[in-house]
Image 1 (spheres, each protein chain N blue to C red):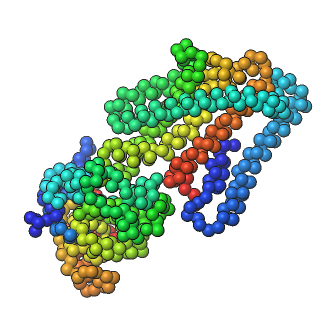
Image 2 (tube, helix red, strand yellow):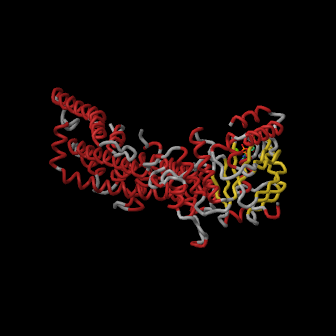
Image 3 (cartoon, chains in turn cyan, purple):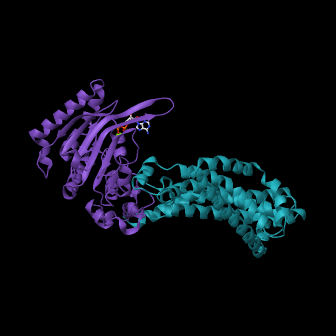
Length: 283
Length: 270
Ligand SMILES: Nc1ncnc2c1ncn2[C@@H]1O[C@H](COP(=O)(O)OP(=O)(O)O)[C@@H](O)[C@H]1O
Ligand SMILES: [Mg+2]
């Protein structure tokens, strides 16, 4: 369902090289809406209808599987509640993502600069990566308490490795001709980093961001399972303990909405930042 | 000649060596280029033309030999922004617009306003891209990209311009047009140019001198002064003397690679 979104965004974007007339472009945007939004929407609605009919026909108890109508009822009745806890989870996820990505990019920059640093630091990064998050989450609660910080830290930990690896690859994969040109104009290492390596690594970084943004949300939710009474993770745990399936499903729905929103936002940002990259150049 | 040469190369030898093999890319190359002279270097692929240019431009430290550019070592000439480089691949930064790409070398000037530089907007007009100022490289044709690369190389108003097959990646039509644009630009600015090419007509049309190199190991086998009057126009390409020069160069290429006639054929064809 998420796959067609970039195509849709691409279609909606004005193309500077195409100075013809607006009408064909608009028609195309409409066609693309029809092509890429309609089918998944129809599929989703069909699934919901089948689900609803099944629950009603088989008389499935609500504490096992609630009907979509019941979930939606719960969601809209408690929209303020879900929005509040969703905002908390979102904030933790974004803070964690920023922290993890920031440290990863800084680390990748250091490692790209020196093989010795790479050899000494990279194994540490691998160690961090292979440690199961679920195992360290309770530790973080002991160390950092019940507030937001351990959740942010878990989201950061999940984000860290993919960004590090892709960042390192990106910073290293400078075109030899471009590098030769920078040498020919006597560019300093810093200038080469800021003007060539870092911008050149953005396609690789964004590929990691696309993976890590949803992962950061998962990280925050996992963190919330272990402590505290704020955020969608704790809402899910409490609902589960009370066998309150409508609330549990409504919390999952909120998470899904968050995930879709963040993904679209990431795509959009990527299109803006990487307008020059092959992956974004249409026709 | 050598005493006044703007670029002088003596006994230049370069060996590429790694664990498995050694390759003698250049062997005892001597070359002197006067100030304001346009010299083409022609030779089969693998003759060491790029290696020669990189050594002169300070991008490669040769195994042995002496190089002076504007009276100083290449690395120092590079620091003083004496040398402009155009590579076969334009290697523009895709996230920068045309004008921002042209400005790039000026941003590298660590010593502030000390070094002189050309006005980027003027360069833009000089290479005929005024209307494309704010375009990005992916919106340009191959010929236009190479023009940006040329303008970028001129950003510091260098007195030496090193060009490594700058027209090599272009289609034949664009190449012919660019050839004459280059000729016009050079006849206005009279910079010292070393121009690497595979094309004999291109070398004869543009140059004051054509240096012929042979491969394995790369060395100079002929040095042909082209005494065609300037400014040169398209009709010069149909003159008897033009053909005579072209024949002489073709012969030298063939002689230089007597062991590998196929290579000379390839160079002559380009
Ligand atoms: N960085 C390098 N490492 C090893 N061998 C090289 C390198 N650069 C060039 N060579 C070799 O040196 C020879 C001359 O290359 P080059 O100067 O690029 O020739 P040309 O530009 O005339 O085609 C070739 O045989 C090439 O394989
Ligand atoms: Mg070459």
